[in-house]
Figure (cartoon, rainbow, N blue to C red):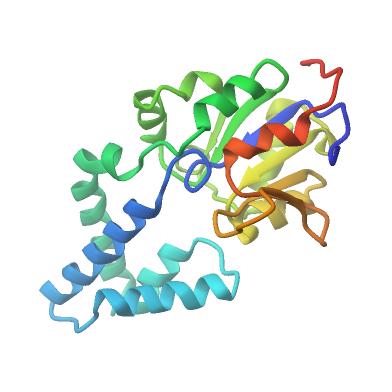
Length: 233
């Protein structure tokens, strides 16, 4: 049992944890490549992917924004491309952000025992998207970057989560797929953490040498809390 029995709150990331963001990210980089080529810039889809892979290997936070700013000729062009992408994405968001396997089943297991909150870098649209997928009502609170005006990994984001829920850091667990955005700032705030890493092969759940848990999917996370009695606070 990796966590103490008095855990109260689970804070859950969305992309890569609840929803599969790979189709969306692939569409995003293809859109950016086409957009810049249409605006006279010789930047390919492969160029975007190479920069993304480099930044991810460096452990950089908010990678897609950094990729865009790296290749854009100006910040103004980056913002224009991002605005056009969001317009293009709106009618396609649901199909490009499918629910990951086993998510509803895991939420059914976790909800009776813990308070659940969203902790995501998306905009306010995420409420409707999760409602369409049938999982928004599992979460009592939502900490959404587009509504807070701050994003992970900003320490203020994690401070807001703890303050608004009134939970002590050592009774809270952050579940996310990004080491720089989710795991490291949660640990720095005194929380526990589970890194969802779809690239691992086996075992499905393991203890990282730096003290946080690693699970292959959100569907695997309930196994980390199998200990009685648990009481919901």
